[in-house]
Image (cartoon, rainbow, N blue to C red; front, side):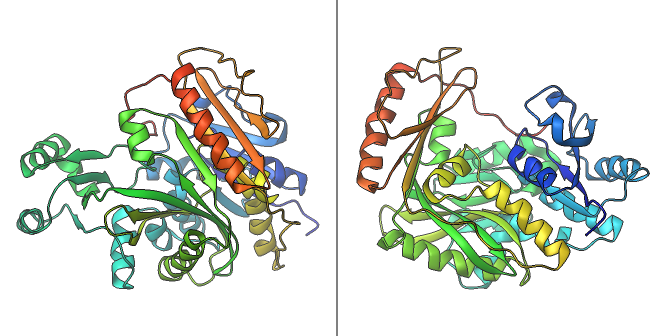
Length: 403
C-alpha cells in the first residue's frame, strides 16, 4: 500500500482518540466529521489531516451531504464510526459512496434495540419480553399479558439514555402522547431485576478472537436514573459467569452480525435475581464507554480502540490481524459525578491504583491486580468512599446527541 489510506471517522461525542492516533501511526490520512459543540475539545489535532464540524450528526442526509462535500477533495478509502449513534450512518455513507464494509441494513441489528431483540428472539436466544410501539391493539394485549414494571426504551440511544420506567399502562400512554410521531422509535420491555454484565470483544471474519467478560456494580440504568457510583470489574475467564457469558455472546454475534464482520463489539447481558437465568440485553458495534477500554487494557494488554484501527486496516489490505501479547490480570473501574471541580484522589493510594480520571466535576480511578478478589475488595471500599467523598447527582440526559 504505497499510497496513504484516507480514513473518514464520524463521531457525535469526543472519543476514539487512540484509534485516530493508531491510524496516523500506520501512515493513514485521518479526517474527522463531528459536531460544532466539540470544537476545541480533546481531539488529537496533531494527527488529523482534516476536521469538519456540523451542527448535528443526527440527520443522516445532512451527514451524507457533508461527507460528499469533503469527498470533493479527498478520495475516502475507509469510513469508521467512533460512536454508537453513527454506526448506521456510516453504513449509509458506505452505500452512498459504494464502498465495502458494513451497510446500514447490516448494521441495524447492532444498533437498533428493537431489531436486535427481534433477531435474537428468532434465533431462540433469551431476552426480556418486549413489544414494538406500532399497533395499539398489539400494545394493549402485551401490557395485559406481561406484568409491570416496564421500560420504555428508545431504539437507537446509547446505553440507559432516555429510558423511562412505567409502572402501569396509564404511564405508558402518557409518555406516548408526549412522544407523538416519535413513539414508533421506541419499544416497551419488561423490567426484570437483574445483575448486569458486559462482554467486550474483537471479532475477525465473524469469529471472536478476543473477549473480556465484566460485571457492573449497580446496573447502569440505576446509576443514570437514581444516581450513584459506576463500577465495573473484569471476571476470571474460567469462572462460571464468564464461561456462560462467552458462550451466549458467541451465539448473539452469530445471530446478529454478518458472517464476515470485523471490528469491536460491546454487549450487555442480564442475570435474573429471581431465577438466575441469563438473558441478552443489547449489543453495539463499538468500544464500550465509561473508560471500560482503559480498564481492559490494564488487565489484558489490549487497547480496543487501537486494535479496532489495526483490524480495519488489515481487512482493507487483505491481510490478517494478530493480537498483541496478552496479560491475565484483573481490573476494576469506579467513576462518579463529583461535587468538586477538581476532586482530590490523593487518599486513594493503594499500590493497585494505576489510572486516575482528570475531568472537571468527575472522580474516577482504575485498579489492577493479579488477584481478582483484591480488585473486588478495593472496588467495594472505594465505591463506598466515593459516595461519601465526592458523589453528586445530575438529571439524566434524554439523548447523547445534538439535534
